[in-house]
Every structure is written in structure tokens, then in C-alpha cells.
Image (cartoon, one colour):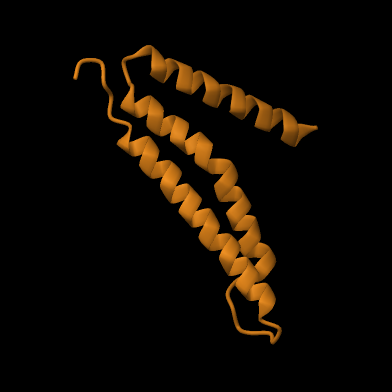
Length: 96
């Protein structure tokens, strides 16, 4: 198939990100439901925070995967441009 690109890496990154964040959120709920204090290395708030970070980071990581899969083509440039805009907006948001 001419012009067809493999997007296996991007699909894998998105799937793993969704799975990891779901596991973090389920862990946060489970830790919250356990009323008795236990010797857990993290609490529900930390588990939920990890889930949120994964949800936020997954699209950025998938853009890098897309750029790698399409390297040498205009799609890679577009993916890196979008990543640049996201990075710039993050910097602006964090410095305000």
C-alpha cells in the first residue's frame, strides 16, 4: 500500500496511557474506600495525581511517537509544531 504509514507506536502510547491512568484512578478510589489506615506507599490523593499527570502527558508523548512514525514527512513537522504549541502554553500557564 503506497503512502500508508504504520501508527502502531502512536496507538500503543495512547492505549498504555489510557490504561495506566485508569489503573491510577481505580487505585485512588480503592485507597479512599479503605477506611482503616494501611501502610501503603502512596495515598489516594497521590494516586489520583499520578493519574492526572498521565492523562495530561499521554497526548504529548503520542505526538512524539507520531513524529517518529512519520519522520521525513510533513505530518512529522505538524506533530512537532503541535507539541511546540502545547509546550509553550504549558510554560505560559505555569509562569502566570
